[in-house]
Image (cartoon, rainbow, N blue to C red):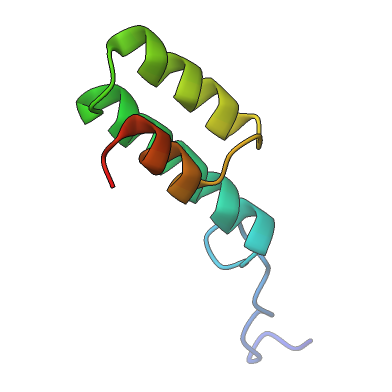
Length: 69
């Protein structure tokens, strides 16, 4: 590489796509929504969020169990 050549693009967390990270983000986002504004009582929402983050439920299943959909 010469000084006139642009530096190679390095992979960073902001430009790498990973389906597992996307799924984790979706689960965490849904868990936050459930905790903040779910329909079940708080204890049940916490348990749903725990199960969701552990991968025991999908986001759609957690919302359905909460009664929001």
